[in-house]
View 1 (cartoon, rainbow, N blue to C red):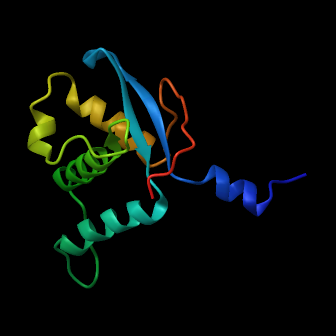
View 2: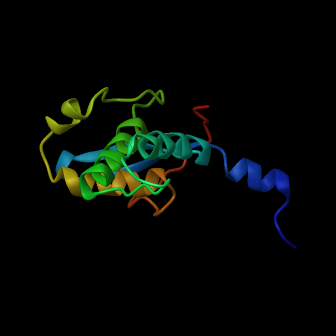
Length: 125
């Protein structure tokens, strides 16, 4: 028997998962982003892109910026509050930031499971 709508809705609520970042010496909380939040961020980026005839092309720098914004908004404390207000704040942290940001982006957007997953039922919406 398949899942019910209620089961899918419950499973699809925003969650906070723990992700181990060995370089930082422990786990961080990553808010798994609802699709509406991801679309809002991506729309903002696409609207700002140059292009002709309605065609928008994202270059590598813009893709990196998109991943950074998603990671910033998804890296939260135990209360679900964003930890770093700006990318400059995040960039002050030591470690292989490109890899860390890529991992957080992938988890936040549902692209992969965290290396260590402890799913909380709390919603940040």
